[in-house]
Length: 107
Image (cartoon, rainbow, N blue to C red; front, side, top):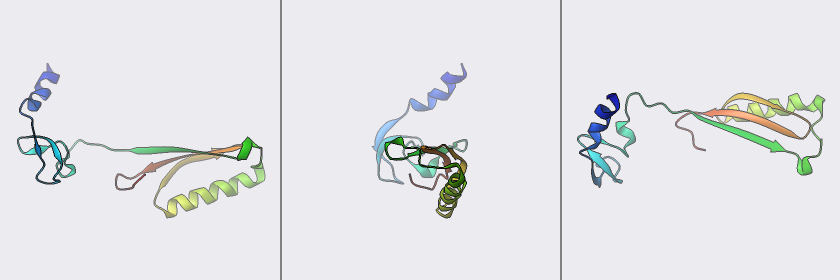
């Protein structure tokens, strides 16, 4: 029953132009589906990107004694650009990196 109550607000949707963004969208009452200015207060956005780099032909070129330096360089450059590095690791022929973006950052 709870879902039926929540869906009732979609009954009065009409196609129109958003007064805030000028985008053709569905509008209803005083809220606009397309408009970032009227986001629902419980909205939550997290963007995670998993990067994988590999060596040419997957040759074992990343030696153990150089890996930490490579990981440190990737982390430093990422953080200079404002990306939050969650984890970075790899082996002889590839590197994995998981980062989290802020909602204001572009991919």
